[in-house]
Image: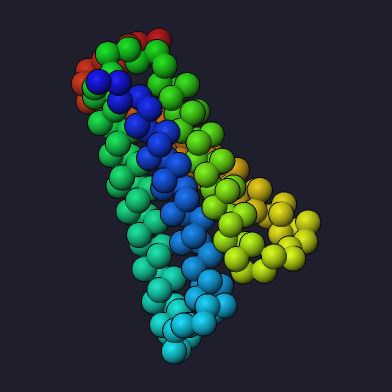
Length: 147
């Protein structure tokens, strides 16, 4: 079974969740069933950040580690991490666009540039996490080669 395609797919799903969880307070405030107090918004935002941390460093790193343990060829690790980062950046850009259009359909260029930069940073962050998981698996398996 080829598990290499699993890593970019998981990175894309986590990036979609990230684009929603990062903008949870504005979504809650603008919804018709908004929370009753500012403390509730703070708790929801903190819970969203914790969930994002668990998804990124638990699920994504764990899947990267698992894929790295099952791969015989370690030469394509950087390409796989790059593909994961690219999938995450595209998913984050789409998710950010959807969330921003739900909040207000008349967004300016500054909001577009901010959303693009945020999506790019999510892609880079998830590529680094994926590469760290792949490298950790290679190190644990003893397949580390001296350069």
